[in-house]
Length: 433
Ligand SMILES: C=C(O[C@@H]1C=C(C(=O)O)C=C[C@H]1O)C(=O)O
Image (cartoon, rainbow, N blue to C red; front, side, top):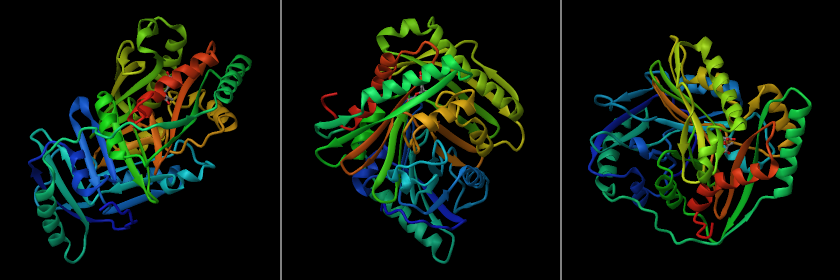
């Protein structure tokens, strides 16, 4: 059910049925770990996919743009009956933060990779729905019909609660290295034209037993209702998963929703966030960047007057909501190419910040801080992959970062990144963190 083979089909047959069930994740009981998962509990959006009826891979940014363009165009799927309304996806995937990296653990993910699941289950206003996709060809319609009734009849009607017992995790991430890099960044900001740079670090985690990634998803969505919980399997038994608070773009036709998310504090100190000069500067750099970037792409742009607090379990952020009506012909491919990486994960000025990251971060970010999510004809939701980990067997590599501006202190940035890592560590089953 979860084998991932590259299929290079370009047209698919699909059918769907309503499903008398409540939780797409519960399908894991019958079909095993999903190949893709997406959930935003606060808005009751959830989708789980199994298997792979189609795959698209990109080896660089231009290739990724071409894939996103293809996947957002109409007509690649022929529905046996009327297409379902409000279908998320049906393509799910993501791409790297930057072109190159040294970490072989990221190779199965490629630069960019998107999956069309064989089976997709998602929440609708009325309950769940199940769709089946098969490459166009002789017998495809029959295969779709028989799989629909077979999968529909065995789909569990229960809700998948977290249930694994906590296990001891060995966690390591050298603090002096990170703090030295923060100090180097503060020095570069003082000395030159760099205004802000986001520095990330990896946290190596080793468990006693293989991680139960379905259980991790169950915990992530429960503990982070305001975030988008996601999972993408890649070949060779590896997966990238997390729960991120940051939307890069949500598109319905020409209507775009995006946001600036930058500036962070511990929940107990959230009162200071709105008056903190450092956090406001960090935040406004992102707002300005998004507004300027959207200018040539949009007919109308509107943003919140001032940032509001976005309270998460272990950390509070400043958030400014931004909405726009896009010009004709601008879609998810153009938006991702233009917006990514925002200064919320790169810095300002962009070129200097990316240069600093490449020279000093000593980290292959892979898909962390890249855009991940779903895409389909005229609709898409791409989030920025924060608070996430690459997981294989009993090894996990977690990623956390923080924006460095003039006045940043290494010790405080260390603690900020520790807070940001807590949600993922707990979800991996670390009972003691
Ligand atoms: C880089 C991360 O987060 C980003 C940095 C933030 C900050 O520095 O205040 C806040 C939200 C994100 O844009 C991360 O979580 O790893």
